Image 1 (cartoon, rainbow, N blue to C red):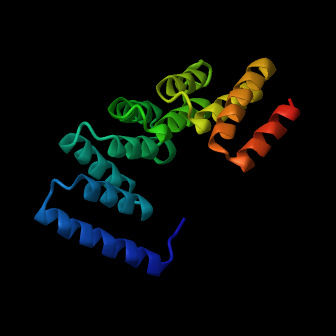
Image 2 (image 1 turned 30 degrees about the vertical axis):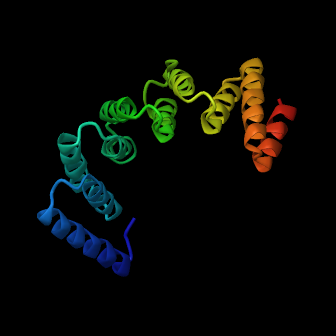
Length: 183
């Protein structure tokens, strides 16, 4: 996909600003992550890879650059083993970071280790670490439904519904009730 010239110029200007900022202080982890995002936005995947790899080296306990690199390897560079490696490191660095469980689920269900229980297992692990997370509950229920495991899907949707009620999220309550009614 080719970016419009005005947008490309905006991204390049932001890249220059970030590079200048990093010449003054190269320890700014968030600026490195932002620089990688800008490179990815203009289609410079190698530049993004280099920036996030560098960020991983200077800040090995962060989760964001590992997550970003995992996403880059999964959807853009199609290196699924490296995607998994980076997502797992992101998860190790922050077990409460819900997007990494969803990303690993997507990796396992769409691209890698599809003939295993890895997709289901990562959702269960995410729920062990974050037992009341509505997003993971709904994703697990939908996974069971897709697999034709109606009893498991019903149980998971009921758990999700209970959580949605606790959160007083009426639109989610309605959606989950509809899913249960259609099982």
